[in-house]
Length: 506
Image 1 (tube, rainbow, N blue to C red):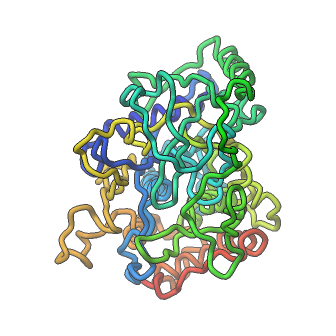
Image 2 (image 1 turned 45 degrees about the horizontal axis):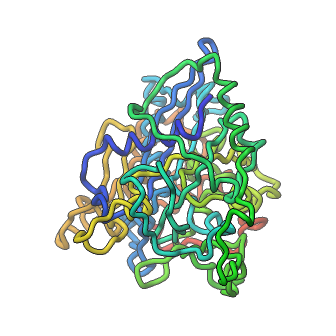
């Protein structure tokens, strides 16, 4: 139906078509990218339409003292979170079209009164240009490399490409300061991916495929007659990749000590901590982690933890669960070219929650397929290092975060430090300073959807008269809260609880 490289291409092209505002400075700044894609399968014509519906960039997080009880600050600006919150805007818009009777390409009426479900053939995918921060980034370093974060020096590499001899050192993304590293193997399509487990050491000598020069953010295609053959060929190529034998490696007097990539995300307070031993004993795995802030702790859980949570509760959140008959799950998670381990991704995103039971109707443990693309994001830390020129100054992560989603009104939202990019101090605390993704803005969009729905068509959970605050509406989503209670008690008992005083805005 589609390949990981197709998905990566669509996302990179969508980013390329956005305005310059908020993008990194080439050769000096880098960022991460994530996106949500809608895939529609038309069985009668056997065609598949793939469309980016939300895209986000960003690497920053605000500290807990900067959080606002008005809900007007964007707390977490990591790309994965930006992409998911932009998708919420898109889903609210589609539900508006459904309740107005204008027809939605995403939702159709469900059996329960006031409830909606996905149209037949519609599913969603999640793309991220790098392994999510937190547990999914604690990956074994391949044997040919001696340290997780060596400096990158590659004068022989072609600027902006992945061709030629790859002399890049093995980088590691931290939760606050990400980076990229190669994952050279071609990967099978979705149908074959689950049977071909990729490991970092199996991708050392594979030649990366190049991105197509002309791919749009939305494509509709009929699978060619040799699609199956292409998938099998990719699997065959992947299975033939081998690590270098000892005789192929230039020996030195320095013993190669096994090591792991490090994550900047810290273990949640009050629980087990990282032992910080040398090599593979530096981190503990499978733990909940919070993202580092700029000098102070944050309350934002790592992207690994959030993706694992979405695999049980869905990515629609508590508010939209009022309108939906069942949770919305990502069919697959696709990762761009970077340090990657299929085993670690399974551990971080799936196995930690696989035993959860007793979920209410509409919720289930719904593990996504895990795929990796051979295509690297052009503004990754690694690619930025390769393009860096003398005189450009110190390399740094881009301070801005970009959100784009497929909505007719204000699809683009560029932020910095939790507020709209470029706002003055005088504007802080006003509506003009707010990101369209902050809690209060999404809450107001949700209330607009409630108001647009005929009272007789409202779901029962929204007919209560004592619903006023953001907290009230979240708690009234009873099935979602029951599912969250089961997940918390069985898998994530140390997940920090939100401070109620930060959720009492209207």
